[in-house]
Amino acid sequence: MTRTQVGIIGAGPAGLMLSHLLHLAGIDSVILESRSRRAIEETIRAGVLEQSTVDLMVETGVGDRLKREGFLHHGFEFRFEGHGHRIDLAALTGGRSITVYAQHEVLKDLIQARLDAGADIRFDMRDVALHDVATSPRITFTDRDGRAGELACELVGGCDGSYGVSRPAIPHESRRDYLRIYPFGWFGILAEAPPSSDELIYARHERGFALISTRSQEVQRMYFQCDPSDNVDNWSEDRIWDELQTRTEGDGFRLKEGRIFQKNIVPMRSFVCEPMQYGRLFIAGDAAHTVPPTGAKGLNLAVADIFVLARAMERYLKSGADDGLQSYSATALRRIWRAQHFSWWMTSMLHRFEEATEFDRRRQLAELDLVTSSEAAARTVAENYVGLPLT
Ligand code: FAD
Ligand code: DHB
Image (cartoon, rainbow, N blue to C red; front, side):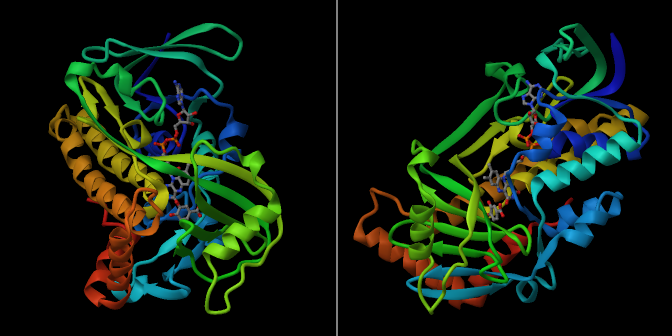
């Protein structure tokens, strides 16, 4: 049996950032993670960090490599009907911007910082289960040698993503789930090629959405809307490049092609669980909510939850005052629903919906015309895209 102040399930952005912020406040935690360190550090996911995520990483001492290797973007492009239209993030938001830096690089930096500070992170844990979360929590697990273990803690951070064990530990009658499933997914690739554009491109085309992002001068990240039940093996390199070229064509634009070395398909859904707490269990990040990736909000929302939760836990553990913990869910949900709205809006404005009528398509184009020609509308997009300040 191990004792700690905060038991954390999951070493994703939420769990690692929680452990990091608690450590800076002088609070002990133990992280139980089901995957290996290597798997975590190699899984390709998000790429866009909001200004406040970057600021938090820099201010708390885990932003050195991000500052050196991340790409600062002051704008992005909406592309439709064969033309590109720039959204000037910096000009529309008083100088705020986003940084392109891959999620697994954020995870490498957080894991290294935590281990350097002597943290107890247990990778490869199986059968993680929560007990007595309403009163005095315990977490049981099987370690990588097959031995049973137990962790007793005052508080639990449930940071184990969409399919973890934390959310189901909140009894059905004590929570409400809100879910929307989209009838499409994103086909993501990594390609060995130089960048085709200095900024991200969000393209709406009759054949469906496409997104041109980047990772470095040598590696590019791109996505296109697809059938969520499709198989990556149905897509040869030539077919992928044809589809991406078609969806981004116009104004003489051509994507620079190269060897594709990674392909995956992700389904798209919007999900929120309310409240995000039960007794001494507090869920955060994808464990509590999912957004479709179009607004680039998932990782950033996970960090924003943790910013609120870490302070509330610190206050409780140092002074016994539980007001911050009591209001955690309500505080976090305000930002989460704003991000849900933005992510749904970007998704519905840019994707092809099979059931859409000609009226719907015209309305979609009128909406893109609005956000690229009215400064007020463009500012709404820009403010949401760079992210609200952390509160
Ligand atoms: P996770 O990253 O899912 O971490 C949860 C951890 O818990 C995992 O390591 C998992 O192995 C572990 N775990 C699960 N179950 C258990 C268990 N039972 N016991 C112990 N451990 C467990 N977001 C953005 O902000 N910007 C983007 O540009 C962006 N693009 C995306 C593109 C794609 C293709 C995808 C798939 C997602 C994207 N996202 C983006 C979303 C972002 O990746 C997630 O929102 C983010 O990873 C959430 O972090 P988390 O820590 O809450 O959960
Ligand atoms: C990336 C992912 C997103 O979901 C997005 O909206 C923008 C960029 C990326 O992986 O680079």
